[in-house]
Image (cartoon, rainbow over all chains, first blue to last red; front, side, top):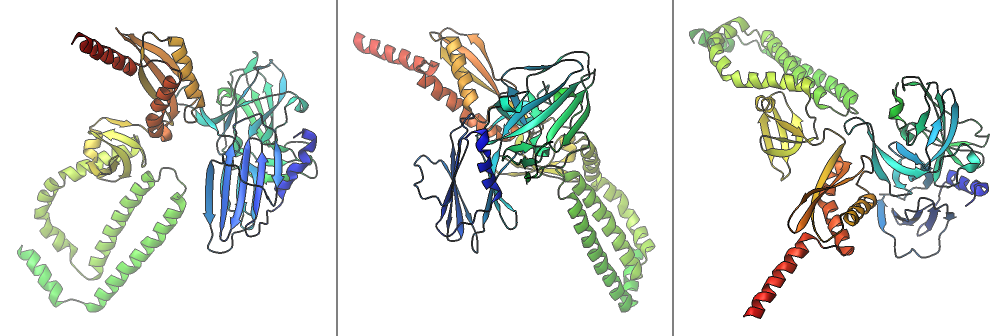
Length: 267
Length: 276
């Protein structure tokens, strides 16, 4: 899928009204997801290829093909009455993502850098009426990592390799990844190398802009001469466009101070 | 004792039924009020990660509240508290001796409450028992061992013992010791081990896995592979990861020390047969 075709992703804003015995298929990056409604139950089947660079997108409803033999995981959700209509939409992870750009960035003293990053999302199945979450399926099998100076101070996060870019057009488009704008203002007297970054996705809102792209809230940090974070802001990204929609609100309430030191967000 | 007998005789003869009714009503209302505030309390602590501290305070408040309620009830039904307490005075010394251990446990529990070396749900090892903390009470700690036994350990004993808490930090390290034949390449073994760690979804990539040679023996090399995982997944990881390493070693065609021992044994048997 190309960036210019992102309009197709707006299908996530619709409600999935499945009739009895009807099926649905979604190919979202490396994830293959099948849903089926049988009597009072919803059957969810999925598999992931773990190819983090896969940029396919395919949405078929009703699905009339055969399930592949290699499907690995299956879950069934039972209802006492008729199974509800579903909303199938992407969502951000439940813990922060540590992203490692292919090449290290250096933010020079006194400079401001705007970095475009992307993090893999999950697919959330929810009851369209009550908005109750039924299940969340990560598009990739996520690897955990420790982000901290010592094994006693830090946080358990998910890890992903990424392309980071200083211009949006240079960031390879992957439909299953949400883009985050990170503003780094280096007010210290030494250059700041960015080898790894922690994106606190659990505090971010997920938007779909008017082009259909998934974008999270933006992050802005200012680092002082002692390496401390002087200001950290989480704000709605600029230029979302009029047709933008909120897909997911933040999972966790933002604490008064998320990070004190620059080492808590970048290394 | 005479005083006590007289007090109880007075109670029997002059029992004011109306006051008794009021007294029980008072007790009933007292319990309803207690339940009401207890529900409010539960509502406020329902999202706290460590409810145990709040629950210990709750227990203490309930004990004190019930004691006051009981004293007021006795007063309402015109029982002469002075006489009862005076008569009970002779028992105070005996009670004090009997309560020595509970009081010691209570004070130890008080110190543990502030020190917080573990919380409910943690896996700890203490006095030879290893298991999950089920509850921390005013007098004791209750834990469920991994083979599903309930163990009660007095707080006094907890404070005087070494406790190791395996769930205190979010990540833990697993050290796998492996013996490879001294004919094999150490760097190839290291590469295989690193590959297995990078493929395993429970192995953390940071802190990075670490491979080193621990010892060169006569017929083998002892290598140690250190890998980090999350504390919650540690038991699964501990049971699965060494198997994965061994499978990878086999798949790569490397000779582990077990194979070598088998080869030596079969050679010996072969020689013995040929000499016969």
